[in-house]
Image (cartoon, rainbow, N blue to C red):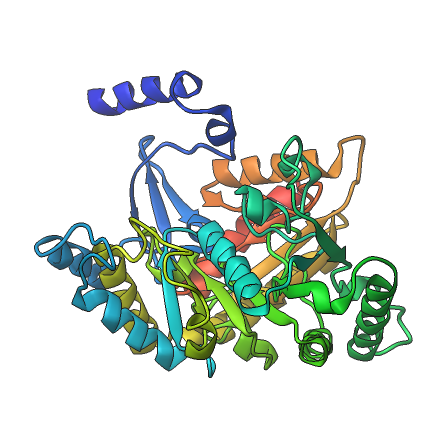
Length: 433
């Protein structure tokens, strides 16, 4: 091993001396020197198949040549905005390109740096427009870690410990198809349940005319990769319209082809009033957007929301290139095909291995829920599986309230051969637990 790599590995042994534990102790802290396509290249000389996409960020693959070229070209002209003080082509061109792939009438953008910022902006916009104080979210949701975003996040109680917000929010149950009685249609069951749950909330806790918005992940992400019935989201749209409540979709993880359409709003055929987008927007560059119609955005007073780094010119250029790649390489269609292929293989594994409780998938957003099979808590079992897979060269991630779900989110450019390769390793690991 080269001396520089030995020095790098020694440095990682002191990670806790340099980085806050909240950052330093995530899984798996794999020392890498390069990434390309669907792979990380470790300082140990090994090649790792990445089924995390940098947590649903690298939708067009790591370091796509077109994106890298766009970043280099942009840096030759501008490194920093700030938007509003100056204006530049890439931010306007990106807005124009996003209008083409978002559902109508979502055509106006406030650009930020992260998904959490997009959520903060969405909630602030809803409150300004409606002049109402309260927000409804859904149990198990994750919307970010700032205090405002945490107020509507309930995927894990530890995220809110000592940080309970000073302003009140309300929660309704998320629709989990596994909870529907076998003899009932789950679309109808959860639509009816949402109607009743909302009526009870409005009767006992908050008047509907005090609710600014409902915010929902159209597919539950960190909370366990739960895919709700389309009828549940359609009923949500209906309830919001009935009471003048704005509907916000958190599409931070589901956007840019992940669910087999540009956005989950199109997958489920339900258009929100406001959308938060980030992660896959710029192929790894920090960028996000709060999206709404021009009509709503015009009601957001000048100066009530602002940013220094949001809409960075290099990030905007990377995003434009990423959108072009998705179109040119037909990654929406590819995601549907390869996602279905992966889902079918996972169902075969589910029939083979007792440790698999459930398999869920939409596009290339796939969850493999495990169950306790010995004295180990299920979260420990998942970690053991992840670590064993990593040793054999494939990187998965986890989610769920107890860490019980293996999260499989490969880049959208992944091939069927790479899917087979990664899942054969998972099969081997599950056979030896």
